Image 1 (spheres, rainbow, N blue to C red):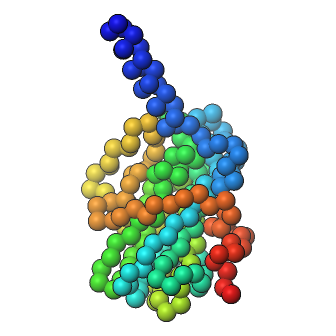
Image 2 (image 1 turned 180 degrees about the vertical axis):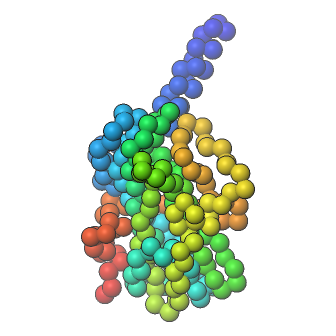
Image 3 (image 1 turned 90 degrees about the vertical axis):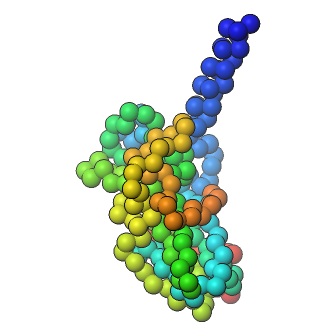
Length: 209
């Protein structure tokens, strides 16, 4: 009896670990898969979308890589992200677009009438590639936008942990998987329109009327 319970527990743990490593479904329209040199690497891009209330902010600070579009709903900023993994290395564990979607994203902090948005989770393996993001921000008129170099990439202010935080169970990533203390992650959902792709057009909901 005890052996059967232990066996069931081990099977459940194995299934959980496999599900955490599972790649996105092949029919997911928000995913573009690219070739890889290692079977443990799934390169490509996961496209996501997030919405954040502006609140009382009059100034929004954004990474200077962001493409700004003036449109959208008053009082809200819409963020479109392209989370890209281009890694030619040989990791000890599976690293894929499910991880890119989980461990990279945008976050924010507020200071008076200033709302600062930064990226987190990116990393650079130098000649072996890395994980990077592209960002499109849809902002209503009347809000001042300031672009900052220090809010994206491996040197983003939002990834300056005083120590390397542990990864969630079942994941593998070469950078911090959450924003640094003082920053709040912005939940996102898949974007089948690939809005953050450089040559994309705004989806109908964000086009100026």
